[in-house]
Length: 166
Image 1 (cartoon, rainbow, N blue to C red):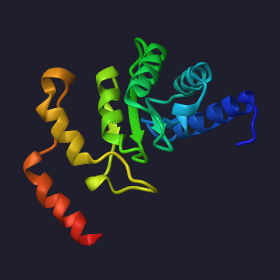
Image 2 (image 1 turned 90 degrees about the horizontal axis):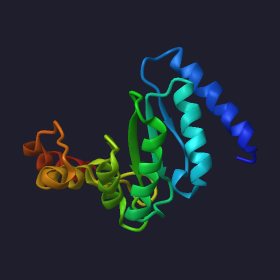
Image 3 (image 1 turned 135 degrees about the horizontal axis):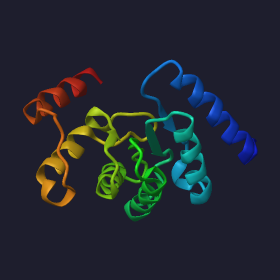
């Protein structure tokens, strides 16, 4: 971006505030969050919350992060939102085949929204596969402690339709 940290924070304030004036729910997405200095990422996320963000997205923009690292990052962001009505979201790319694993690791850490795609079809190397995430959460609700409202009986037909269209 060729911006100073102060300029980045000012852009966050301006952008999120403008959106918050127009919509009740604003999601702030910190591009390349997983390779960002954790102290500055925390500062940026706090700035976004103070400016009106209700969802904080932690993208693994280049599919670089390992599940243990992603868990640690989400745990750090949870400390920033403590006591606030804010949701942590994931957006994982599959460059190293870890998008689903990273998304589930984030859920285990406290994330409550996963950005994913049917059959994992997404930009570049793809994103977390919705059907894999959903079935892992359903199968291991004992470990993850969460559920979805997705009708799993429709996953196969949806997957086939997307496959045929692509």
